[in-house]
Length: 178
Image (cartoon, rainbow, N blue to C red; front, side):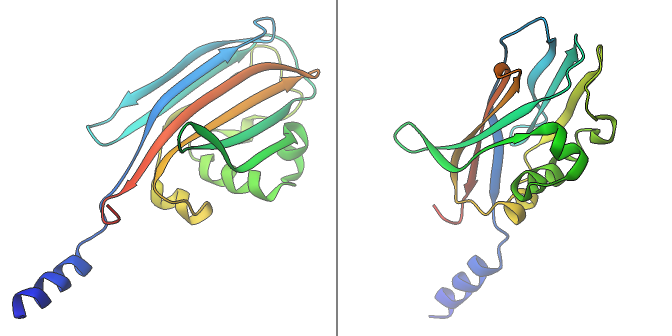
């Protein structure tokens, strides 16, 4: 009986073993006249952690950029999950007028020097996201999710035409739940 109580206390006191890491990243440039993808990679930090880095050089001045953000969850194939949002990036950068996008912006702020980005996006401007790690604790504060594999697709739309898409997936497991 004492052994069972000790085992139960030890299970309750052990820290949660969380694992979250990026599984894939694909950057597709549909119109090379607007810009070029310089970097799109996942970098291993150790066996359990990795980070992504993306760099895009703007080749033309762009006045108005729309974004579509779609979240998917893997469950017998990829299924739409919670968010499918379209917004004007220029309006957001000047007014911070979208609650969901603002939550994501706060998460990404340490990795993307957003203070440098204003509309219009100038020719030869370098847009970059450097060493973005999937910190599940910070992410779950803003977006409560269950364990599983998730994908995000960001589409950049200029003059009603998709010019760039970023597709990535991440896996998150809480080993206490399994």
